[in-house]
Length: 92
Image 1: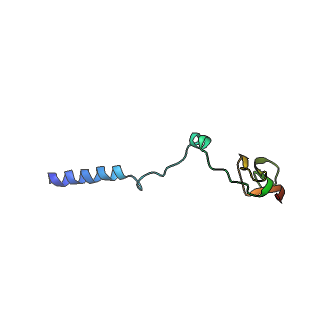
Image 2: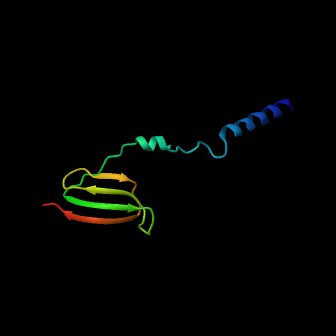
Image 3: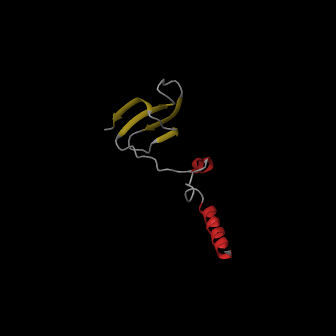
């Protein structure tokens, strides 16, 4: 009888250690995102300016991306699905 109680207690303790589904997913904190450095795209033979907006009304600009022939892109703010290309051309 005593061994049955000990086994039950061990199984319960193991259940508490495992939790409700295993390990918690890793999440990036805002501090990590603030210091993260992603590689910027190389412009190649393109020159353009794209404005990014918060929603489909295109009233609040939240970011931009620009390229100037054969240089590295400049990106500010954040990119969204609501984009307007100000100009775009191929460099000679």
